[in-house]
Length: 79
Image (cartoon, rainbow, N blue to C red; front, side, top):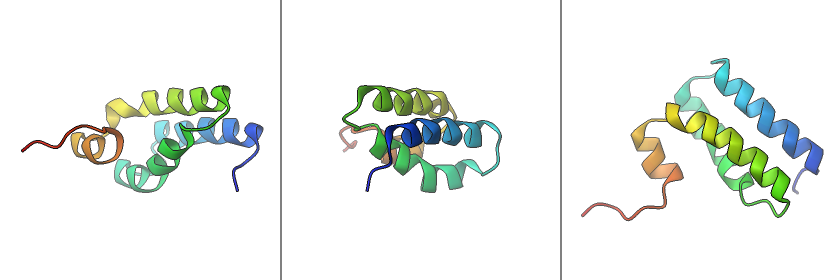
């Protein structure tokens, strides 16, 4: 089941705070939190999707190129 809108908004903020405070390593964040963020981007509620997108944009610069290629980018694979 999908969480209520207020819970979604709170979660996006909390996940961003977790990342910014270095509570977990980048690897753990990428493995466990990033997939949730990417899934939540596709929310039917525009405000919720925007909150998750803002959180993702805050963390994206700190992600490794490998994580970006595998998890975030829907790019053609090099030959």
